[in-house]
Image (cartoon, rainbow, N blue to C red):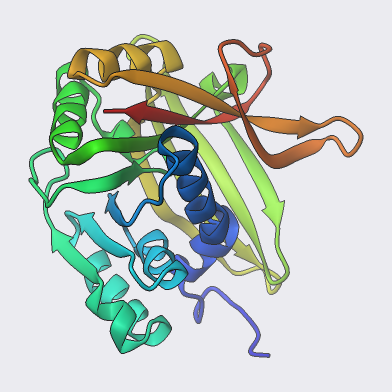
Length: 266
């Protein structure tokens, strides 16, 4: 196996290995749609898609599934297209469209599910802009469509800190670099460190507003969604670690950190 250093590493591959589990996410989306509607979701729009790994997994998971991968960044879309050509067969590629567009304005064909995960929609720092995005999502969903979002929080989310996670050939560093409690603006970076002491600093940068769950729910309701449910990530007390189970809840403990999915129903 080729040794991994800063000079030969692909930051998108490192990101996907560090923070994404696309098989789990796609299965979760399918499970949620079936839970609410007792039918199968066929069409997915992945907003802020970046490398579009969720869209790729979506079309691979069922021969009928179609996906629209939407992003404003031409460079990352080019990477996503090239990557998909390596991972998908011709039939799967025909069912995946890449679209360079602003997700808050783009009117796509109506779909069963719109996803905006990895906290990507937090780029909308003003309430009016967030509601505008939610209204556009509502417009682009089928009659029984779902908007699926994620969020993180807890008192550590308001702190300036670094967290390191070791992987086989590198270390992933999550850097909550700056936080303004007056505006809830947060600046975060992702760094990668390697065994030879080389590193990639600020491989990714995020300028977000740290939205709370009540704020997100209120904005979704104001945008016109019929219902909004919170699914909180479970915790294994014996192993002292997170699980892949997400449970529907209306309350949770004031933990230092938490991760949740938000399911908004048209």
